[in-house]
Amino acid sequence: MKSAIIIFLYLLTGILYLFFQSWQSVAMEFLLKSLIIPVLIVLFLVNIRPAGNVLHWFFLAALIFSWLGDVLLDIPKSAGDFFIPGLLSFLSAHIMYLTLFFKTPGPGLINWKRIYLLLPVICYGVLLVCYLYPGLGLMRLPVILYASAILIMVTSTINRFRKVNRLSYYLVLAGSVLFLVSDSGIAISRFHNYFKGSSLFIMSTYIMAQLLIVAGYIYQERKIPA
Image (tube, rainbow, N blue to C red):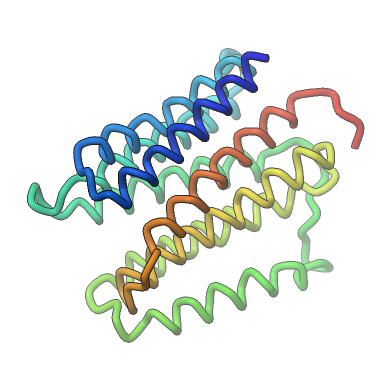
């Protein structure tokens, strides 16, 4: 029951953020965005006690870095450009996620005999970077590094197959794919062509991505049949 209430508050906070974003209410937009991940952290802590399990601490760190990225990227441009610090924060979040997902106990799905499973991820990454490359300028190396990190993060969630129950597996996988879609939206709108509704697209996919990842990780710790 507690979890259901927290999820409702999380989604409500996200919806209110999107509403005020469309109305260009800077103060409310910043306040609400800074509350999104903390609500999710509460959901995590209500269901999981990090003490004694280093992977839980990695997960909590990923959420904290995500929160820091949210705040930095939402600081008004009049106060300075915090895109690089925000990018580094989310890069750190992805490193935390991919580390703990690769370290999930059990035999991994991906090995040299199944390298073909990575082809969709690799092809998507190459096509995205090629599409963005002409407009990246001095940001080419940071963007390529960041893209590599999130693609590896998606790969780490694919690798959880049969290590965890099915519900946990598919929730986290769906979340990681939505995270990739959200970050792709940011890259396209910033470095190639700003598209109408980009903010709504980016944040709605991001909000769902983080929720699915957290929910999937919580279910990983519950004894649900595979």
